[in-house]
Length: 340
Ligand code: NAD
Ligand code: LMR
Image (cartoon, rainbow, N blue to C red; front, side, top):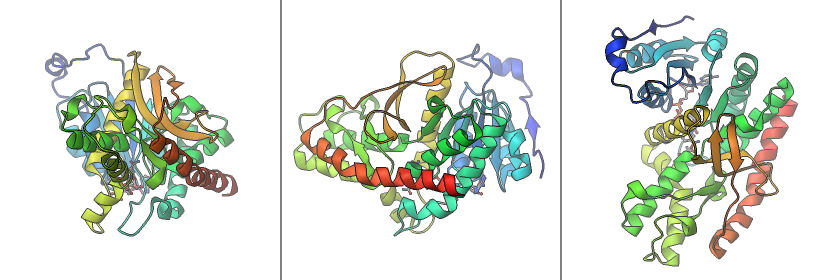
């Protein structure tokens, strides 16, 4: 297949004046799985991001149309669509950030782990491409099961000799987005000012929101309400899967979350100070090799992995309870990458 379209703005001088970040460096962002339910709105949101100068949209099918469509938006980035395996190299070459929402989504009744058989191979192949064509890119993995696909990526990069733990991220931002929304609703505080760390992993009980550290701290929530908020955050993905009734999982809220996380990566690369987001990264916070917690992003990717801070008794129990499942999901990913 073919390079679908390469269009620069027809009025660059006019547009340039409206950029808030006129001096922002050139940055190429690649989206792999760009024609999908997440990929399309994520492509739109990345096209709206003034930190992006080049937007590369890759999928096995459908990217010429998505790229042509998005490329007409009068913002900074040029947009190129790439379709098919043979164009993966061109899609990736020179990328600073690669976002991966490629793979199948859940249907009602499935767990994220039920996606492993299909998505593990997809993520492995795409990461082999990254190792070859843009080994220094920051890699944002959205494809589920994140608890296993991130370890798969790390093993692929290790085998290729390109692994840098500072540059590999499992995107758990949607858990934070949900925790903030649900907490603000219950505590009756304006959502724009709310922060809630979410740690652990990205599946069921491995998702552990730390409402004891939420800001602003609400004194009006009972323990029962904290338990209900925790469960709703852990089951947020399932809530959407059931509501979509067979037509997939979260796409719009995920695209929003993915765009927030990629923007944080770009800000870090550009030297903006104090950029902190939760992400599933290589970690010493627990005995597990990967764990989601707050990380500070900088010019090299992860600059600092923050510890958990003080936990309520309920959160301590949640942490103990999640470790076995998270451990086995990590090990499953590592085993897959090394046997296939
Ligand atoms: P989708 O089926 O709508 O889109 C997936 C896209 O990936 C399709 O366009 C497909 O052609 C493409 N694709 C498949 N194989 C590919 C390959 N080898 N290379 C490039 N592209 C390929 O699914 P979706 O709703 O966009 O979800 C995608 C993934 O994201 C799923 O695994 C889902 O579980 C996951 N997800 C993760 C989170 C999270 O919080 N991390 C949230 C929502 C969804
Ligand atoms: C989510 O949290 O929405 C995603 O992981 C998709 C899913 O399968 O729930």
